[in-house]
Image: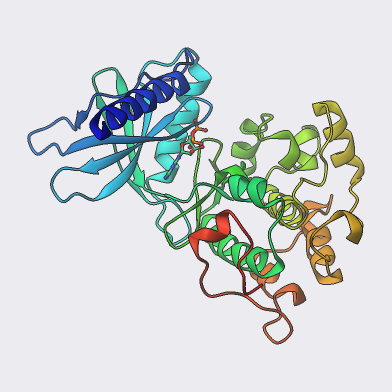
Length: 328
Ligand code: ADP
């Protein structure tokens, strides 16, 4: 009976994985063994379905040689749109050069049969987005910890002339220690010269997180400072459970962004009492003048992170994905 149940569960899991990966842009589920081409090509055993994004599906992949488990991002090698192919190429070019404790580690990428496989560090605890959805909002100590880690990653990127340009809670993955790992470099760009910048002035990003100068293409901007704007949005969203410029339509979001219209919830409407320091930190990032936004180093120096008056946990348990830690 147990075997029967297990078989039924496995069949249901496969069916749900297939259904999840059935959109026409997405690659079908990979075979049970994925082989990297070449004489010493590694073999990966395909495991559980992890999730899917705009054009990628993601599965666990166990490296046969040493049983290390990775995340295998699978993308159809031939994409329906040139733009998607470009997005993917940039993603690989930039992501493969990054190495930081708070950035999803890139291991390798290869083509096998009709798909391209990207082997990444596994983040088994989902994303901050899922955590906030479950929890409604995060406690102040958790927000501080995530913000400090995120600032470390952003400082690293910006020092290397990389702008991520799509920082949002759904792209902040959580490893087994509940440490932040920034992922999805699909909109990342190397910011080099003004000429280069002009070419990149394309509208990009997710409405809720978009910085005003990205909307207003005719006006200057579009530098790494867009990421600092997103840090402000992320901080607000982790504290309150919703992004500051949330609206029904994209136009309404853009209008609020341009006018800098956002309202902190009343204490009675929010599980957190949001301190003035948090509000001042968010407002420094959500500055319409990009040059006036702080650098990651300035952010971690902000009184919101004051070691004497605030708590920053050194460690978080995976159980806090589901419920507030008891010690808070
Ligand atoms: P896309 O580039 O298509 O937006 P993502 O990079 O967002 O794809 O990945 C799609 C989904 O796969 C994510 O939402 C997440 O559920 C899962 N995923 C991606 N990278 C990892 C990872 N390193 N570890 C665990 N799951 C991951």
